Image 1 (cartoon, rainbow, N blue to C red):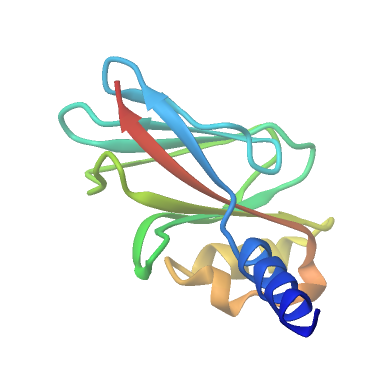
Image 2: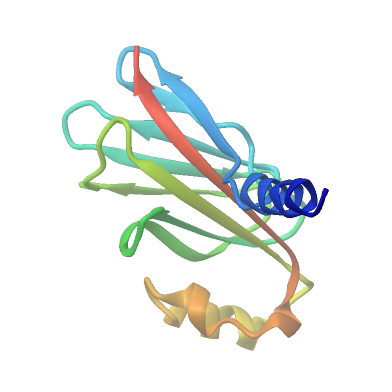
Length: 147
């Protein structure tokens, strides 16, 4: 009986630690990722690769996309995308099959000086954010498969 309980506990821990990974197909080199925090992300694998982010929130967001197992490989970083605005970065290196960690932070109402500060943070903005500014945080691991 004792062995069964230990096995059950270990099984629950292992299952609870699994990542929730969403697989997304690319069609003609374009992958539309599922919304993360009401933000639409499109990856273009054609030619000069690009990532386009469309914020569909009524508030500003920050978006950070990294290679999941190598968080120092930043594919997209924009600390401030205004409400219902878009952002695009080209010349980005990413490949099919990579596990991409998408992080979206939705900001509280911000004063102008904070907005200027966020713009100045640069690519590593996520580590420098004060939780006081964040209303919600969303994360999802996504893998794009070549169809």
